Image (tube, rainbow, N blue to C red; front, side):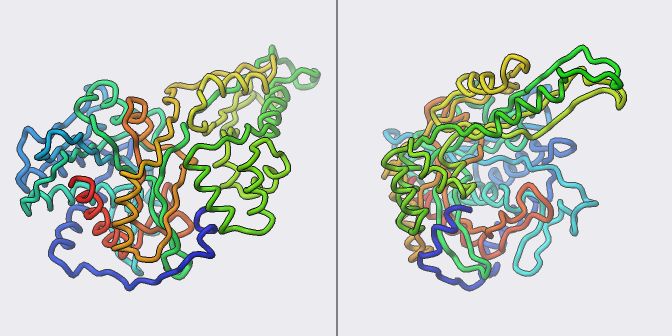
Length: 463
């Protein structure tokens, strides 16, 4: 990750392993294990079951039925979720919302070294699908509310928690989107704490940097289509649907969207220039002064993460063409996946893609169309507690603001005016811990350190 490289010059601190030695850690592990071992894939799993299991634990801790709202729709009964709330004592303070998705990416047992739906502890890691993305944080959110209720803690600010389905699959029914459109009062909050932040470790497991996600791109797919009457392949024609599509995709490949900054990315690149130094650091400084500096852009964009953080990006991801080996193609299609910079629109990106594709290829925006990404502010009321609590738990570790080049369910809540922040706390390895891939894992130590940090952070915001 880009901010790991930035932190190369930063203070590196090693920490001892954290075992399950406290009774509250053991209780948390039971919740975490049950959640991970509940299959919540779209193909055969059930978020509804996972939500019910967490709701039962909340109720056993003392939550009233009125404080737990289960939701789903008849056509998607296994993709339901849960909204819980712990009422605050000060009605003048707006609620806060803890957001998490219950669903996970598909995992085939035959491809994994271990059963992806059995939590295995091995070599200082927990292995399982969802162990990192994002059932550890979901378990921490639920565990935090349980501990607050069990200890009699009464927050000044009402704490809400929304656990949803559909985040990992673009075409699936999305619980966060449904809540934002159909039950906005249920999730109304001054701000949201979500995934997307975190921390990174070096190859030896030493802490390098913490990041707080302040904004994200919007993911949007487009279909490119070239059509032709076709004919016998023994008599080829100059106009060929595959060639027309290829020309359009090469035009997309050659195009670089303009450099743009938000407050977050400007702060990020300012820190990057100081930490990186050399030719790249100097080029970043020039680009901050003039985003149209093509020479500086070329140097900075050698780093693919920097390149993606500077602009909207579009890339071909799926191709389908032809109908027979001995026939000229009648149709050729491609999916182009775009990550749209905050403030830029789906329609605006569509217009540019149509221009690039030319008249021979049609371009359409695929459903669902996600909302325009809205960058939240670098609000000191949010960043302040993150920094203060981190100084207690992770002294000496620098914190950077980060705009995600990916996308989360936070975009649906931002669309109804609620700022969303991806909080740090759990440290991961540089390779991404196998999230969305094989043998997903998370360090045992990171889970329990993150749990303690996030518990204190929620309490800091709740007053």
